[in-house]
Image 1: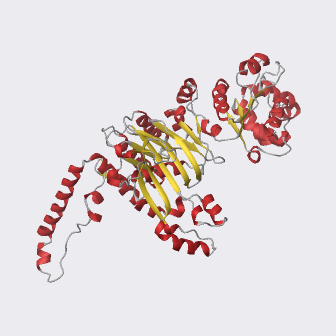
Image 2: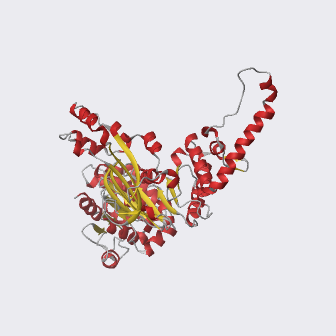
Image 3: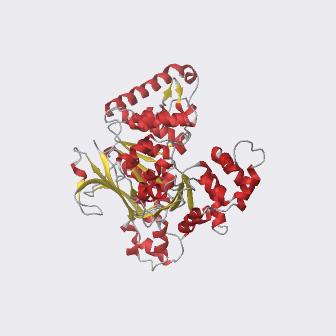
Length: 522
């Protein structure tokens, strides 16, 4: 199977440098809104298309890294120091393209591959020098050339591209141009060259017949000027075809249905129809039910390498957490791979209820709690313990985790180097449940916090004992059989909400929570 093994970027969008190794079957790209997920897919799409017109439509100024441009404009502006943009795609599994195998790549290694190079055109050296001498803040993009080359430095053209690929961007799902390009790409993937030539010939013949039969009477009555049917490349079978479902054009469907149909159609396992499929946030516009169907469809896909950019923990975990590649907003040149995560943890999250895996993966600091009551009150207890500072200003994420799942989340945090405070109950045995139980997970960046008094075995007991007057005043009225403490234990979430709503600013955090807040803020 033809696959993309590696991507190398130099001065492309937010990446001054980036090198990514891809899984041969599935790569799930996750990250914040400015982490560069879309940029990676766009880089692959541009090079695999080998289309100058696509680059011209986007504009070089939108593709070049802004930092390298600013550094050049702030320097002596020597023509020899003009930055170049490079995108290299390293390929594997291609037997019939020996012309792709060469050493003309950034690694200087023998490998199959294609690249895009954007650099100043030598013939414009005098013009560029004149522009640079003016000392204004405009960069001479107009004097740059765009070259699509093999690793033997031979030109590569769209009709010679070694992989068949398709990009589906759900944000453009009902954009007319995007739909037309999708249809054209799918038609090219499913029809052979011989079939396309035959279709084009028959379509022109049908147009000619229409003109001769239907327009004849009208044209016979005209003199110099007559009506005809356009037969240019801009009005061919490839521009006029549409895809339908149940005889209804897919662009007449809702956005969610369009997204599902286009992805499902592209995933069909017709041999050699597509080698690579790039999916940009496929979860957009999809209901939970249709997202589940889409995930099952993706998991069943064969003979295609898939790249998915997503914000959805559901997609990332249900497909395979070990296939996730995390792009960092703070350190864009150092992606983090989850391929070393244990198979047991990956399988756990694949089957577990809705989770917050990506929320944990993308943060720097987190507090993990084990119940709804702790989650409801944690922001208030944090502020009361931190002199008014809150979790948002401190960049701390509070995540509710079932107590039996702590170790799964901690394995992920340990691999990614995230600072995590676990706040949990001692369940009547602090030493066994909170010390010995986490001996393999506690590190300088991961600490477990629980009350050391075994009689204070759960959060509600601690809250009642440390806020007895407040709790009695709020819950004592109307109690007939249950004590206030018993009421809080039997109505954990509701009691926590009432405490937050009525007495949030007055609550005293139990000592172990105060310790956790102080540690996570340090």
